[in-house]
Length: 403
Ligand code: EJD
Image 1 (cartoon, protein in one colour):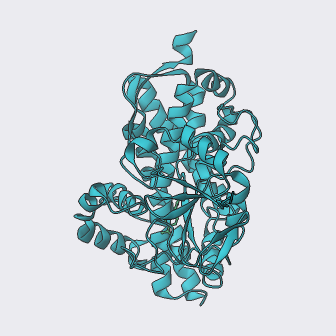
Image 2 (cartoon, protein in one colour):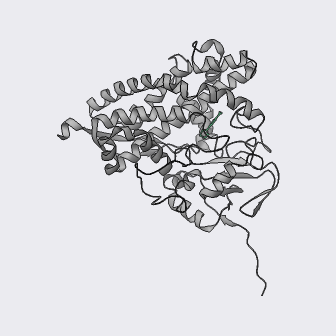
Image 3 (cartoon, protein in one colour):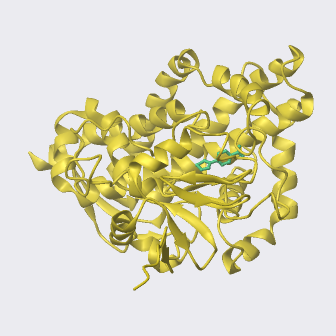
């Protein structure tokens, strides 16, 4: 009898479907069980569910390009909805030049200058919310804090900051297939994209700010003025909705695990590692694409030219061959090596800003709050690119009340 080799597995799993996205972890586990690469038939794309191969693809920008777009749209075959990012959606040598500029602007030294201000603002906001007792952890906290500190650091004024939320929603909805949610948002595109462009101009950016520093790199001849505007746009595309989602999911997961919150409340200096553990446990940027510029392979499976490859970061972060008790949230574990910020040449260049913001919020809350009770439905956002909530009603009990 003839045997037929099956060199890969097929699945009708839809990573962008609203229902699947609610709890994808059982499906991720099954995908990890069937093979290193799975063909997702609904979109004709490859998906990579295991830690080892995700890391290997992240490390191999020659065979797995970013120039084909970070979302499901294949730029090698189809036009992007906005001019591509000149840092995320390019390969070396272009990437090397632009990355150098943002890496300098977002350096550890720059973080030290921001830390006190972030902490002070977090304490003020948390004091207000804790005094109210009940609030929405997303609308009143996760969405408020980044919008209050990050545009300041960028040098952008107060006017119209609600547009950042709409723009972020567009960027990350544009990551998945074109659906009703994306089309509805895009009705606002002409106004919001013009507003964003205006905020990226040199005149709009305060002296000494991150934005001004990007333009100084243009003065020094490292990049052009047009590129400076696009790099400021990258800071706005990647720097707000991501931290909003991550802080929101951190609050949600810590509230869902009262024992973990108690550990944090007993020692608020754990805030930073607690944040990273929530990024591992329930990654807010759960996947990202690469595109093959030519035929290649993953773990021996042939991958054709111009194929989209979906790296299931949130699945790699639960891989039982990499993590002990992967499905347990444990803020005291050694979480270094998680893929929540990506890794390799495109690994998140702003991750230290993100950690600084989240740490400020979680430490301020942990300093005052003994426990968090979820008092209503946690509602997921309809974005296909981010894992995020739009609402999480909570009531907090202060350490004083507890005594
Ligand atoms: C991103 C998954 C940009 C840009 C960079 C990074 C992201 C989005 C946009 C953050 C993707 O340069 O425009 S998490």
